[in-house]
Amino acid sequence: MAIYLFEMNMELSEEAKKLRNKYQREWKRNHPEKVRQYHKAYWEEKAASYTIADEAKELSRQGWTQRQIAEELGISLGSVNSFLHA
Image (cartoon, rainbow, N blue to C red):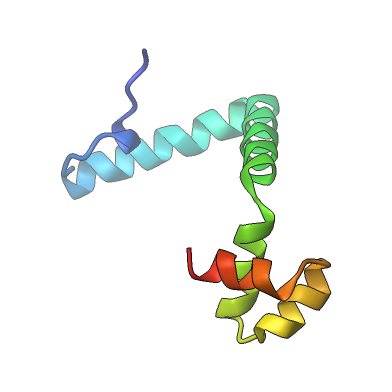
């Protein structure tokens, strides 16, 4: 299993951070297809894990009423209430 510096919880000196960032920029520039594949996989996984409950919670955070959320998502008011109070 590969361990990358940016994944480890370690404090780096400013010089080490600059060197790491330079390396990462160069790697991304030299491997654009791998970057695209990573981004695609990341967002596909995010989309797959995004549920209607998550959407209801997000709309609630934006100030929508439970009734508005139910109408927007095509679910019952009781379902919205359950999602928001789970």
